[in-house]
Structures are given as structure tokens and as C-alpha cells.
Length: 188
Image (cartoon, rainbow, N blue to C red; front, side, top):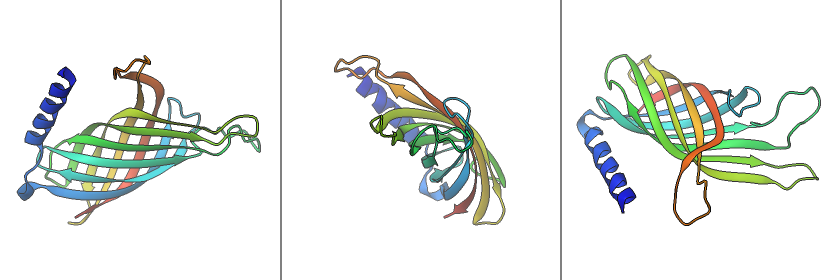
């Protein structure tokens, strides 16, 4: 019951901070970049898209990212790991000024981190679906009224339930990485 009340309070607080229709702006941003550090054995190409609904001080964002070949290291002609990828789907709170030609922002959210690995003949395929969190910062820069450029850096970390009981006790997991992206934002 306590978790339910805490969640309801958080939703109410977010609803009060979100924009009204009159001052809201929506952006769709296809992006590309790289994953690095943490459990990323090497810098890898990542791409995806986000949809951001922003007001004067806060907004919401849905972010989808995909990194093929996440776990492979470049070892010449040797393939260390079979086909693999990491997919993220996050809903985040975005905080920053909602007007002006240059808009810095901070972002914090939660969602899904999916890791998939198609192993060799000796091992079974492995995939995990973990809850995860992301936090970061970035900046939007206006090119025209409808086209903006956006760059950001985010940290992703899995959440795991350390016990096998029926309670949901999420703690920070071991899987983590950074993502830096650059994209073109289209003001809707």
C-alpha cells in the first residue's frame, strides 16, 4: 500500500509540473551516436528516436534506442560473441527551460533494458528483460522554427530484484553503460 501511495503522489506531482496545451511543444528526434564505458566492451554505433512533449519548465519523453553488436570487441577476424544487441525503451521526465533558441535540459527516467545474445553451437541463446533507469543532460539548438539540432549524454543502469520472494524489491543492477547521441529534432 505504501508503494502505491508513493507512486500516486509521484504521478500527481508530475502532472502538476507538466505543460498545459497552450504552452506545450512536441518534438520527434531521430538520433545516432555511440555507447561507451561501463559494460560496453568497445564504443558501438547506436541509433533510435525519441518523442518529447515539453512545456516551459518540464516535460515527458519516450525514448527508444537500439545498439547492434553491443557485446563484441574488435579482435581482428575473430568474432568473440555471436549476434547480439541491446535495446532500451524509456519514459523520462525532462527538466529545462522550454523557450529560447538554445535549451539545455536534464533527463531522468525508467523503462526497459533488453539484452539479446545468439551464441555459438556450444551455448544457448540468452536474452534478458530488465527494468532500468537513465539519467543525463543535453541541449537543443534552433536551426529554423521547425528544425532543431539535439545532442545528449545519458547513463543507463539495470534494476534487479535481489531476492526470489514475491515482493518487488528493486536495487541497482550490475549492467550499465553510457550513450552519447546527436539528432535532428522536428518541432511538431
